[in-house]
Length: 426
Ligand code: AMP
Ligand code: GLY
Image (cartoon, rainbow, N blue to C red; front, side, top):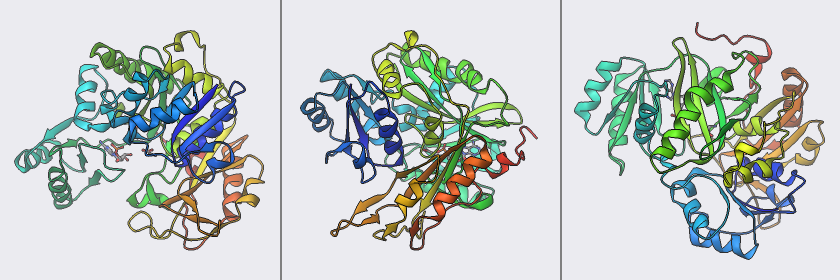
């Protein structure tokens, strides 16, 4: 099998590694890829929002499967163009990608599918916002309707801050926002693979969204993750399938917009039970890396089965008993003003730590061929071990060998879980 993977971050680096490890895969093409992906895949420059250009690359390389990593090309309908061109595609149509593209749409589908979620008000005026904030009470949760690259959600006790973010959301092109009831309890990411009818879960993971240790500071794209969640109720993934994923997949099919790809379900294990707070239409980054690191099922065959409507005959997924921990290294100034162009060294040494894989997120080669930072999140160190403590030590031992001026990483990824300090529904 020949596979084309679209995207250029750590998520796509993990996808490329897992696809290339499948014995049925002969070649992986990545567009545009990054210097880390280049070690495993043929990287080709490409505007991945241009569906016709993507289909042309798929044709040139005669690929058997197109895997679309990020949300932007999915929402832009790149999967539709590639399907029309005759390719098997892992990734939802533009219409189905609205589950991430519009929070108001996601809420409407959740209501129709009777999925447990936070109460919400969709608002188009500041008057509606004022009355919605009164009705829901603090803490306030204010969400931009459209794609906002991780900057769309504000959770705050301050009514003024909530109003200011609401005004900014209404000023965006879609002119609409969602106010939500605040959900307490630990957050969990469940990645559900679907062929449009059948849906199967990967092992749940937990993401760390805040930039600093102990969840201090602003929200980010994700600073680290781990899997499995030993503190979570047994059968959590099955419960998410039964109460959330399957009803949603069935509702999307009923609407004539079947969902093929990965439905990323963010749930809170709140004191009132399981509640969805978001749908995404792609793997999480870095939470997806933690789940994928433990998957033993041949990955390209799984994605191909989903892309071709064959999940029902694919059989159950196999997951290793290992624990996986991912720790993200960020550039100086992240998340507000990340500095780029700094030299990165020590990756070869880091990769020799047993159980460790270093994924490239925001890296580039400078004019001398040296590896430099090119984004806010620069690298992602993923480690597997027989328990969380071993996986954490491997990840942090590797991290200690990497040098990037002014960089930052959290030192407490999976720490509470390793110490058995996480409780649910307190
Ligand atoms: P989202 O873009 O919807 O994933 O939201 C980003 C982050 O905001 C989530 O990972 C949560 O930490 C937080 N969040 C979103 N919705 C809620 C909610 N209803 N209650 C509490 N926190 C939330
Ligand atoms: N780590 C959260 C996300 O990928 O959206």
